[in-house]
Image 1 (cartoon, rainbow, N blue to C red):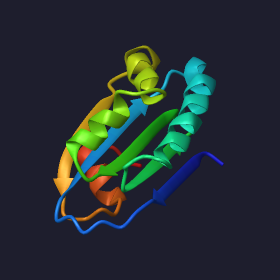
Image 2 (cartoon, helix red, strand yellow; image 1 turned 90 degrees about the horizontal axis):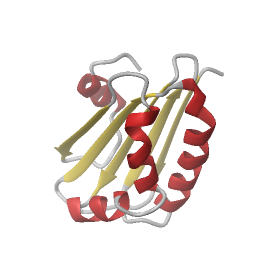
Image 3 (cartoon, rainbow, N blue to C red; image 1 turned 90 degrees about the vertical axis):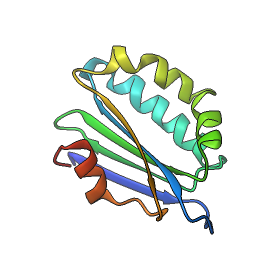
Image 4 (tube, rainbow, N blue to C red; image 1 turned 135 degrees about the vertical axis):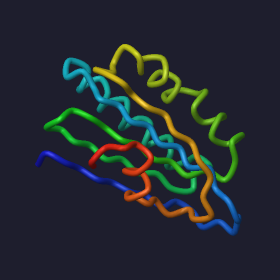
Length: 126
């Protein structure tokens, strides 16, 4: 298996607009185990957070990872990313990336993860 796509929808929301955050991390291979262990901790924390939905795309062959999270507000998103374990991932991002990583934020009327839109925003083929 060289690719993995995972999505989890945690709650329904009646909001008219959502905050979508995309992270693209081309990972240096020597950090793969550290990254995957931390990713597991982040997913566990997301399960009990105010996130509406989240997704992970992992391309193990090319060693890049894409995360997508859908939030009801910027405040709830900032609260989550500023606490452990996510703050550790943010601190290590520049060290772990092999080349140009990206963070993209936009608003959407849908809480569904649209992988075609993610691909367009990142300008990469996933």
